[in-house]
Image (cartoon, rainbow, N blue to C red; front, side, top):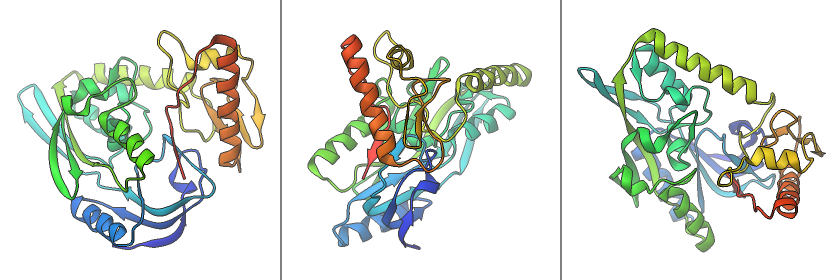
Length: 297
């Protein structure tokens, strides 16, 4: 296990923001993860598990512990007539996996075309878009718990809107300073045979729609969850905050639920815009916006 000290984390996040990790390792499987976690426990270090870095804001002060970047990305396909099961390691890219399967004529994950982040991150936050989500696509997953691999059913994840049992456990762990929650190792998805041309057309429509709505620049995607029956972006726009800048961070003019790093933005720049959006929307509507992203450090 190669352990780096004071490794800058900004290059590993889609926001391109974040200070250094006191220690940083990349792990490709359960054995390396157990080794890393044991090493951290022996030194009384907190642990943060990093996937694709697309739904996280790391403070400029960094993380004073061990950051483990999950890198396993192998996939195995089990077919049975017109049905199949794809078993994918948690470090694999969500969108790349969807494209790879679609090129072989397998449908079930095409809704994830263009979705940033990894398989593990998608399970953690119950990622979804354009009529699909992890909760309806997942068959089962394998999770590292206290050094042992467990098989979890879909029900055990207790998926909700942009949340899961693992995400709630992470919040609880933060509140009691626990060192590390369970870690997703791999997931199995249900697939069905489909026409290659039809699949390609659906994915192209999804890609076009995503591009038409996504602002250009470094961002984490949606910052806030959509309140029930509402759009967080519409609420922020109605509060007059489209294009608002603090430092080198900007609430995107194209979609107000995105905050763009214009180049050299600090975590404080982003956090101040987050606070401003929450305050304005609450004052205007009485709705309290809830973060979709995780703040680390």
